[in-house]
Length: 176
Image (cartoon, rainbow, N blue to C red; front, side):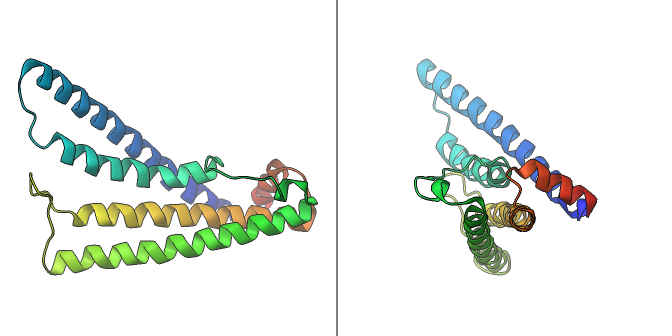
């Protein structure tokens, strides 16, 4: 179990760093575009490049955000339930997340493969093929689903032990 956890966390961290590097590129392109506009020079394709890099940055940040509990959650009702009930809700939410992530990951992978072997759609101005970004979406969703699997395991361990913190559950994962 520890090997699986380490592998998923490493893959998520690699995706996170790629996403951060892409954000830096996106900021550089935006800055250059604004400076060029001020100087009266047109940076052709800046909007298309920023749109494509935004897809990459978002998709590669989803898994890490899930691991760090960074997604928006509203616990107005669930936070008042006993801990065991909260763990059940966590398990249900992560199973649904896993299902949706795997479903959409498969869909985007199939869409990318269809374009690789068939008609390739491209961006309007620079004619950049879109299929690599469909694979990026697929990978990002797959990594998010893998992080959901880890959360399911932690929630099941917490449910069984009725421990109040995820720290104890992660210690349990170390022992497995």
